[in-house]
Length: 391
Image (cartoon, helix red, strand yellow):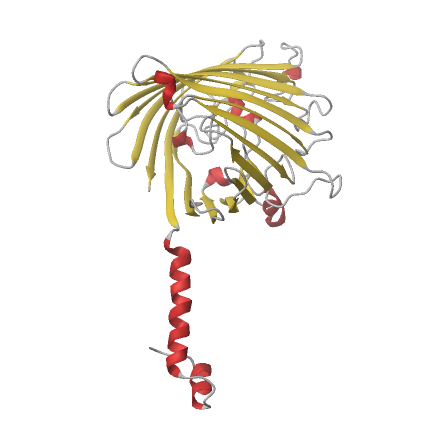
C-alpha cells in the first residue's frame, strides 16, 4: 500500500504506526464503497426526425419540443444522465437524485444561468435533491433541493408519455421547483404531497422579486385502485393545485385534474387531463389573463411489441397565451387551438423505443397562425419518428 509523505513523516516520528494508518485508510475506503454501493446510473438519448407537410415552417405555436426549429430534418433532442440512491425501507432512510440534461431541450431549466452567460446553454440540472424519511406514521418522505413539478399527466421525458409530442396542457404547467416537498402514503390507495418552493417558475435558486417571505405553495392527492378492484387495479386519479410567482405581475394559480383508467378490454386504457392556469406570464395580456387545456388519451397494447396511442386535446385562453390573436381580430383576442395525435410504438431492439407519430393542429378561432410568415395557414400537419435508447 502506498502512503503519502505526511503519513510517512508521522510514522517516522512515532506519532502513528503504518498498521494503524492502513486500517484507517481501509475504513475510509469501506465507508466510501458503502455510500456509493446503492447508487444507480441511468439515462437515455432521445432523437427524432420531423417533417411538416405544406410550405412554410416559420410558425408553429402550441408545440413544445417539436416546433419550427426542428421540422424538416433530424434532431438530437436531449441526453440525460441520472445518479440516484433511492430511499430504502429503513425508518430513517436517506438518499439523493441528480439528473443532468444535455442537448437543445435542456434550455430553460436554469434561466438564471443563461442570463449570466448571455446565451442559451445546452446543459441543465433538471433535478438535484436530498431525499429523507422521517418515521412518523407510515413514514414521511421529503425532497429538499430542485425537483420536478407535481402537476401534470405528461412528463418532460418524451418516452414516458403516450405520445412523442407534448400536449397543450403540458406547456401550461410548471416544470421544476427549488424547495421542500413532503409526501405521505395514508393507505395503499391514497397518497398526498405538500410543498413550498421559491417560485412557480423554473430556474434553480430563483427568487420572487416581492421579498424573502413570498413563496410558491403546492399540494396534490393521488388515488390508486388496489388489486381488489378487479380490472380497475392500477388505475389512478390525481388532483393538484399550485400558487406563486411565475415571472408575472400577479401570482400564477394552477389547478390540475387527471387520471388513467384500465378497461375490461385487455390492453386498452383511457385517460384524461384538465389544466387551468390563471395569471400566467403573458406579454399581451399582463393583467388577469387565463388559459385552460383538456386532453383525452386512448392506449391499446395490440401485440407484445406494438402499442397504439391516440390523444385529442383542446386549449383556449387570453390573447398571447399561444399567439397574437389581436393581430387579425378574427378570434376576438382569444386563442383557441385543437389537435389530434396518433402514435405507433413498435419495439424492435432491446432498450430502444421506436415510434412514428402523425399530428394535426388547427386554429379554431378563425386566425391563420401556422406556416409561412406573411402567408400563414389555419392548419399544421407533421409526421415524426422518435428513437430513444434507455439505459
